[in-house]
Length: 454
Image (cartoon, rainbow, N blue to C red; front, top):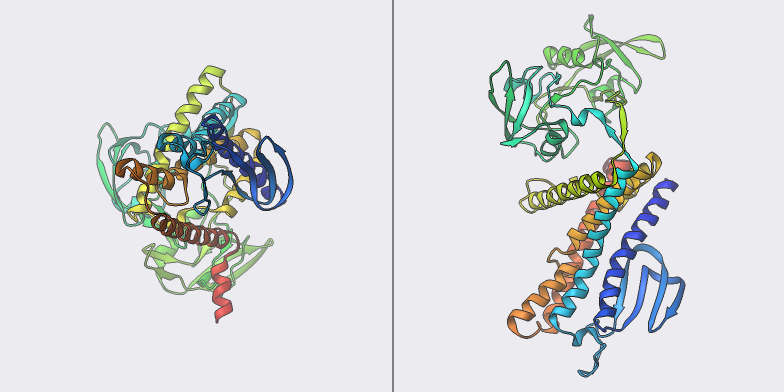
């Protein structure tokens, strides 16, 4: 936890510093007087003054700001004051505002090549052709007619030459969405239609086509869902399920098939707990979203998915790969934003400050390359999100400037204030719910609230 907090403060402070420096530098070049440059909000911890600018580090490391003369709506500025932001041309003001997101974009394109030059651990199978090696029993893929050995060559019309190319559209597939998958099978190319099923207890979806990472995992319980038939029957994390109604289940797939075949009747499980045999009675429950009988247990988590290989690139190649990665991430970000707007995916799939801090902590622990990769990715997100035409963001200011350029005069002070207040409410609401998502993922707060209210 401490590592996550430190990593978050360091990374976010650097990203904010770069962003605000962009505003500061271009403002100075445009002849605008910058009164304050702050990293963080609230009371000042440390600071100094250089020329007319107060530079400081403040208590709350959740952002930063550059205060320019004539920037505040409440300020009374003389029309002849050439150092006031409000007296500059629309073009000059737009350049100052754009400089922040632009610097975040530049930082991302500088950091990402460095990641590949240092050498980032990569999962080796991602570069392999996407050949189906496992089909989850009872899954949409099994019902659609997928077979082990199918090589997926197109997903919704897009060529998928590697597992990496396939995993991105798979991750963006939403529950209930029907996708078209072209496979190569015995010199034929059948096109299969499959409807993605929701993952119980999650906003995600799955098809049921997987790569085998070694031998099929044993039927080991890695978690039990609260209130589920498994919890009521007394199953515990670490239990190894040996038989279902006397029939051996050698691996996880065999367990799923056995439970599916038995349906919703009481079944007897023989398990091994702390090397001692134990018999339990359990009645699986039908899950409408998953369209199958479930006991309420999670499968093995620590699978040997693949060996990691650190690949270092030459400087020129690292620049090419890094920039190509950023361009791919830009496209992915806009695709996700589009699906959020059209409500194809839920805001619950988003991660907020808590999730970012946890991810940064993990990236820090796994090495410098992973930490820099995550920083580059975050910097790119800040650049894109800040140019969205939402009041209170840089993009909102640019929208006001565009209207001013078209009308020949600025919007009224009242209109600007109201729109900024609306923008602030929307942003705070989104941050609140996304943070709740984070806490739910980490702490299971919805269960806590249920217990509290009942």
